[in-house]
Length: 382
Image 1 (tube, rainbow, N blue to C red):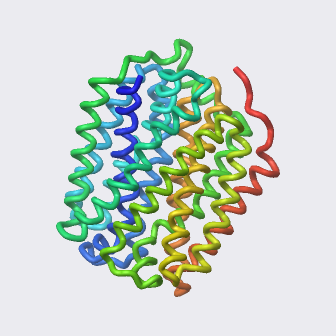
Image 2 (image 1 turned 90 degrees about the vertical axis):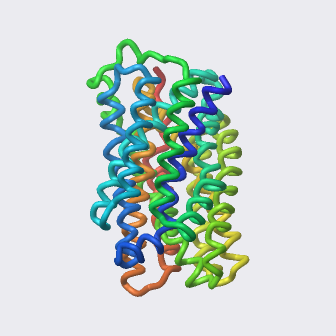
């Protein structure tokens, strides 16, 4: 059980590193590609759109494929996307490469969540998801800060090469330790897509996509926020990113335990706490202690929310749990794309790097209201 979960967590580490590395490398990419920081932020949005598109399509198309074989194929595609990113000759080609790298992201987490649950049993599904997601949080403690250091002192391209190597290591771990797990015998593309007719599934999807956009509106531009508003040295960016990752790690532990008690209640707690922390960033962003402390709290709150939303979407699609879990990552990365885009708009409009925090708080409150008004119905049973 432990080696299998470790292999899944290693996959989460690799994917988490590449997803969040762009935030720390944004100034370097913008300078090298001769574009503005808001324009460079489009690479964050295109990666997220790759997740949005790939998560449901790949999961549904591979409904009858052995779960182990599918995870190996997804990780191989991940390696290809990151190598293409490292050698992209222009901003446009980098956007295409990041889109390719994002395609397997959601499907990997969705299928991996189901495999992890099968390993530990449904009673501990919240902790199983948390264990796999721990790889993503550790990526923010170790992988993202190190990739930022590599980008600052060597090249942002070298950082993506390192991520590609991480993907190869993950492939080896999955091959060695992951047990074969046949797809559900009745699973077909049609039965997987039938889960999409569930209205409550789309309510939770919309809440996640809009609400999580609030976090990404801020975190997409955390590097210039730290250096230009808080006035901390560039060298502190990896440290702050690591502290954010520590916050996510704490949030994973808290969120897993809370979700095993009440998934829907944890969703409410996650939305409310994220909105409060975003307001704190807007208010304290010019103060080093306040800004850094608020960013750590954002890591805790957003991870509690993300983990609860993934478990909620799995519960809302009992006949197609892989698709439900994958849709969560589609929703979160739709929030990633929209948050990065809207945050870039307010920055380009001259409102400064604190304005996305107010925007983000508003988006998170909208997500909370969607769940409060239309998403309280209990999850269906098999």
